Amino acid sequence: MSLELSQKALKIKPSSTMAITELAKQMKAEGKDIISFSAGEPDSRTPEHISEAAKKAIDDGLTKYTAASGLMELKQAVAGKFLSFNHLKYEPEQIVISNGGKHSLSNVFTAILNESDEVIIPAPYWVTYSESAKLAGGVPVIVTTKKENAYKLTAEEFETVCTKKTKALVLNSPNNPTGMVYTRKELEEIAKIAVAHDIYVVADEVYEYLCYEGAEHISIASLNDEIYKRTITVSGLSKGYSMTGWRIGYTGSSLEIAKLMGSIQSQQTSNPNTIAQIASIEALTGDQSEVELMKTAYNKRRKYLCSRIQEVPGLSCIEPQGAFYVFVDISDFLGKEYKGQQINAAADFARILLEEYSVAVIPCEDFGFDDHFRISYSVSMEEIETGMERIKEYCESLT
Ligand code: GLU
Image 1 (tube, helix red, strand yellow):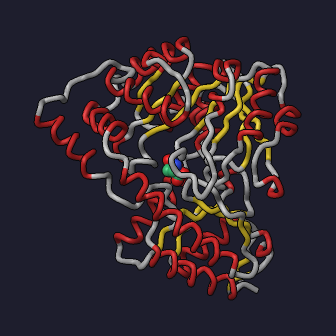
Image 2 (cartoon, protein in one colour; image 1 turned 45 degrees about the horizontal axis):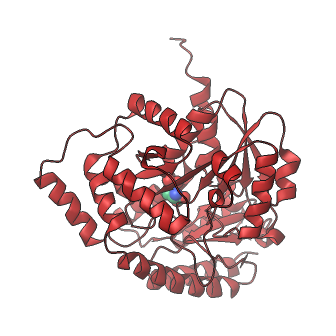
């Protein structure tokens, strides 16, 4: 048989975050004493009142289709949250509920991109942006940010790569994998360039609830009318409410883009899971105290983890202000060896760490940085302590 497969599909890399997280889970299930810092997933259970709302929905027989773009009541809840939390005014009709943040991004790229349109993606970047843009016919233009700028895109760097083909910028704050949070001033400068060059901003704000000690989450779309018109704000329930498996994401955008995404979704997936949508209404409108508790726990772990990383000669990181990741620089170890095995990139470092010390981290090649790895601190303090002891021992053994 000589039938050719889709060239577009063949160019897509599988998600390395999903693959490594899965591998670590499998090794644990096989009885290995694995400490997994790999998952971008809260470690706590979904709050009880949210799960109860889902159970009640099933008991009440609310198990049928909804509108493809989501339940009106959930759109209203999202609009309320956008207004109070993000200072953004979206009508419910401007909101599209999807099967998770990843699905929202796919909807956005499908709605705005034509073949060969360029999408600017600052590196380090979450693995999905480039692949999702490519699937929609876009061409990722990767801009490598600088450590001295806390890995944040500067307006100057942005402007340098704008061309006539530029259609969109992907902006992720708080950032996965760095944990950095853009300030109002930085966002204003970026917004100015996006408006001047007439470029869409795809603002991934899924970690918006997780900002620590004075860091403030600002939605770029809230800055002024011109940037509001060009921004598609993406978020979801996964991270803030510990609802990763429920798969609910959403967007706020112009009515025109929302309608297009609604049509796309109506042909591709129909509505997001009805029961999960009803649970999401409870999440957004019910008691928020568990969100605060999770944040307090992450903050303690963040500080402890950073102090442990700084203690290890050769490792360095900038203290993150948001999300639940630390982006660790291992450039000092490149060229060193572990029992005859050379470390040429973060992938080698992470593979040996997993095989020999049973600690899983995410090497950041697929995030556009091959001399860094990502640690997720959505694990217990005890695991951070044991995991860091192992990492320290491993680093000290490298010659
Ligand atoms: N966003 C999370 C992460 O970066 C979840 C896994 C994924 O979907 O990539 O680990």
